[in-house]
Image (cartoon, rainbow, N blue to C red; front, side):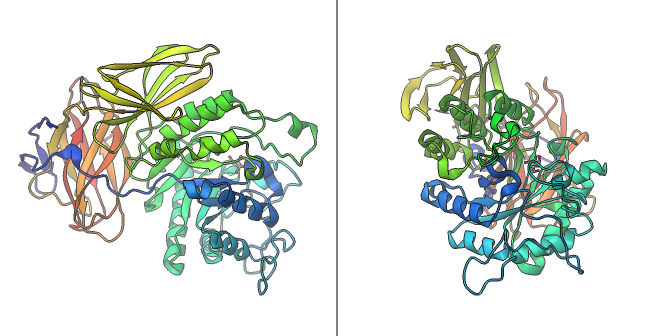
Length: 543
Ligand code: GLA
């Protein structure tokens, strides 16, 4: 496939040198770097609220395995609010109710959270737990069921609590914001401190902890959460809760009336569109899924699954897995849809067309050159034909193969456009395999190491006709671990960029950058806290 080569100037600020180079290979074909995918698993909140206990967690973990969800890639079992009622011992260590968390096998002590983590691990799954960035968490702010418990947050105990979570064996921590919000804290500051506590706990124990930030988008976390505190991978919630917990055991009027709706699913999806923040292992979190919960229908489940998958959003299922409808399970485990979710480019879909109100085309590039994942979404109350054109997908005008992922069929080869009738409140999810249009390549020739301190590598004259677009960053790294750098665009916005190790091989990262359009010049500046381990070869900018 021809790559249009734009001979471009780059300047290494430190040396103020200008250099020009030809790319030495076909940049479209370079393999993606191994970034972590968005987490998949189960979370207790949506169906059990504060009633979570050992029995429920054990049953759900078992159901994750028995249902085939584990085999499909769901791996986390996360206990949310309610596992802890805020008690600490004289040394400040978290103390839990031994009846809620009994021994699970001989030799264990009741009230030791490692019992559950061990059990979850014994199933080949990973364990997740929950706290708040403030002093008194959501259990105090307004618990869904039960009395208010003060002191249910980790503020003042970040190092101690995260060390404890790691020692217990938890692999994932969701950090809520009820306390932080009540105390009017700054999210970027608190969550950076939490990230540092995680780093210390990991160093002390050798046990990794995945960081899930939950401040509901209130302080625009997409602007600061990617790489916050130097973390190599994380997720951040972009909105409020899709549904208040639908707890079957709770027979009060409020709970009996609750149900999940498509409207709320779509609201969460719309609030979560921040593609400029989602890259290199950092993900917008559209909230726990409500697939299979009271109120949902098969077509709504499909809309939910298709939108979360095309977004590569975390797939944390909130339904009671012991009573998941068959059709919901099939939706959640559809291998081709999950392949789009797990695509190694890891970017979020963007809306490329809205031919009529409520009829939308969402798309994103997949790691394989010329491949796009596409969602044709019908939000209206009547069936409608929706088309996607290759031009909208940034593909060359040449025949492309279309596959319908939920219908599990090849639709055929089409020259420039594909049209399908989508039922009311439903979607079609496609992959379109065509030909990449030539991207403009900007080479960082010569001395391309990223240098620590205040030095940075700049691409000063990056042009895009349409403005915001997908950009691939071509680099190699000899570092042993992921290096978290930064990228600033036109000195206005900056984002964390994680560079996974590549063993010295050339690899690509895909980012969506809010460039200035109309072929005006853009300045991209990369920096990273490292020596000469990372070499940037250049960037390619989709037309
Ligand atoms: C907030 C979060 C939810 C859940 C509850 C627990 O509302 O957004 O996901 O963790 O707190 O109270």
